[in-house]
Length: 468
Image (cartoon, rainbow, N blue to C red; front, side, top):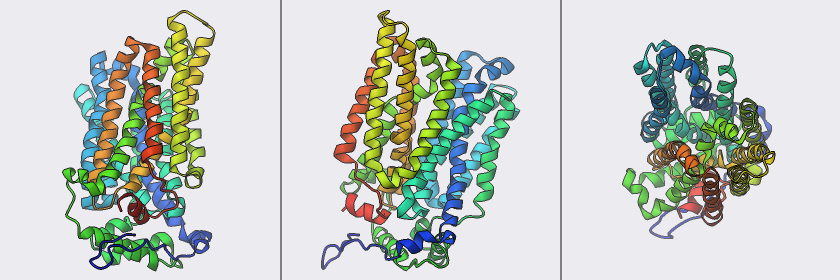
């Protein structure tokens, strides 16, 4: 780690001296990390449950509460609006009350939201419930990957952080499947389960050691790190490295939003914000929210297409987790973005053939192949990696402000793409996918030119490279 000094200007990063075999071979040294990650990703599952709720519940809610299309559209959009508010406030909350405290707040908002939806007799309670679950969802989207990155050993930090995306995908798929079998009120009650597990589980796991160190709670910091690494692990070098880094940051002024654009932080901000922009404006939420409409327009059986889509998303994301810390973040982003370009172009060809009344039998096949290539590619890298990199790339003194802003950028992109998708499809169905292909091609250039590899590095070492 490079540190300012009046005499020598900097000194090199110190590698932790804990023996790798010692850190990985004894089960008692990693089980608390796994438990803590499990509790955290219950929030990710809650996120997915919120996102996947409206699709299977749409018809029943409209019939039971006599909602117009406009009223249900408002109900759906309030989720993203609430998530934007959650993104803005989650960073400061996580810095003020800790990562565990922020997850408690997120879970509480989701619980209140689900109960409001369950008891709703009209549109007001329904909308307030949706807004509350959206807030919890937006807050979870920031604090979960940050917490996991701060507690995990560097050797498998990427794989554990990827679990965030796996559980989001699983939550969406489970909501979709269960929603076809139960009423919308029962589905809202089921949404309470991951929130309850999260709230109870937070009592059993330690706080982020890096946050405790930042707050000057040294005794609790060492106890938390010891609990995470195991009684027999040598934590002295890791603890010293974290403390040295925190002491360096404490000499810097407290970060505000405008501080993100200072020269010392601008590269971290550009990397994280850029990945969030390309993740969303590459079309994922337009395609995700309107997959059934895409299949219907292409003449492919909608229900079958949706089931294949849901299963493929979870399977590919899960298969991707073990290789994150072997292949690295950058190669996965490049492979993923390349696949997104191919998937968009195949789908564009399908709609081009349909518009020009050519090759009728090939249209539905090309459409489903294109969408499946797209979602498989997104799940293989672009879905999880921006969150992994975001959780690693910011110095801890600006992590709250910067992470919250990056999450806001992501949610704004989600809203913009989902809102404009139908307008673009009305303008030109194949042109829409050509636009997304171009944006994903630009993402490839961005990753090659700007994004560093963070595989196998401590958070402190990453900062020495990104913000020297």
